[in-house]
Length: 263
Length: 307
Ligand SMILES: Nc1ncnc2c1ncn2[C@@H]1O[C@H](COP(=O)(O)OP(=O)(O)OP(=O)(O)O)[C@@H](O)[C@H]1O
Ligand SMILES: [Mg+2]
Image (cartoon, rainbow over all chains, first blue to last red; front, side, top):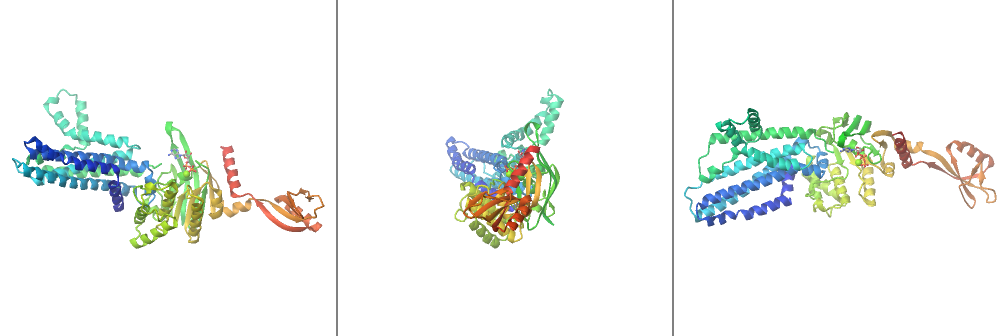
């Protein structure tokens, strides 16, 4: 499995798509500097822009790498040669997943470092009203990365049941948006404003809320931008949620993939 | 213990519009360790399907396949197997050297040994100069060679090769034949599929013929060749003035004092009796046999008629 992780990382680093995304990433990180033209709340704006940018790049990476890695192997018939080795389907899948997840972590670290540099620079020129809490910003990026690793697990699950890249890629994007609004919908359903909605729909919405991954819990942008204190208990809960959910998704994926026929 | 053991193997594919295709019909087959086994069959006969089931890539509809007694659904069954898929494809962003290294590490070879073996096989398969280039830039035959290299590098006991000679030039084909014969001398087991009877005739101990998903013949190559003797070509020294008829047979060829007669098996004894009593000199007797190709073609056409 370790070699499978290595091979996955090598593949990503030599991939054109990845190289393209990374080049745009470097160019984009100059934008916060340009944001200083706004003259007001420059530091807050740079933090916001950097964090959103990181989030966006990680989203692209996880949708494309997560959604296409299994599909590509099956489509290009690499699976015949690789699974003819004494490598179980489980190790293969987990190796692929861990490699991709590790890569997203690495990208988050690199992009995070770049964001720190940018924010440092802008706060030195235009001192911020509130001090920047660096640890909060780091945690914000970490939880963002975790969110996308969870999304990769979703993409892998969709890849194991699909024979094309259509479902994994677009399904993952759909899940991302659904998971992003699940919390809001849930709160709306619980609020008195939703009295008029039929109970059946409310039941379904409630069921979906527990089934869909809840991505909103991972979002610490507001805390990072305004330097608000972090809810420690909530974060630990999110962390637990992350591990349980990822384990669940990967177990289902390996169960399906182990039974899958490679034609 | 048998190297490969296939019991009552059936496989159905459900295609589009729910059409069922019987790809394999009750295949039973044992291949011993140290045996070179040729798996012969026309296009679409089910060779690759059988091999994919042995390698655990497809699940049988019923029946089992085992390698060295281990069920082929388990990764452990492939621990001592070198596998070459049909029209193989390998991670094309890696170079041949990296890929062979990856395979070696999957088989837990230690670094020194892997380095040596990797150099050996890459040189043997004429990939040494291209070893640092990504596989993406290789020609079809070169990819096939990578396939052979990665099947050989870890020195397994069992080789399962799906059309090992496909896509290779004549030199490559001869090389593969040599390699298989070498493996035979080392007491390894090779199971390979092909449609070329000549390859089987030259290297195999045993051959199985599959036609439309059914195993229609399974025998030692020498038995097939022996049973295939159809007649004899007898060269006699005859005076040039006498007519070229002898013992009721007309000469098929005449050059100077030598006449050649084709005598089918049943008539051979009486013909030789006539030769003896007339005191004619026998220059040469050649056996005329069907080769494996004729045998194969007759099986395939029988399969066609009955199907
Ligand atoms: N994925 C699949 N779905 C449906 N039918 C299939 C599938 N794979 C193989 N078949 C059918 O199974 C039969 C056997 O195919 P197989 O690939 O084993 O033939 P083969 O003997 O390897 O032929 P070739 O010499 O052309 O490689 C064929 O009739 C083929 O149409
Ligand atoms: Mg085939």
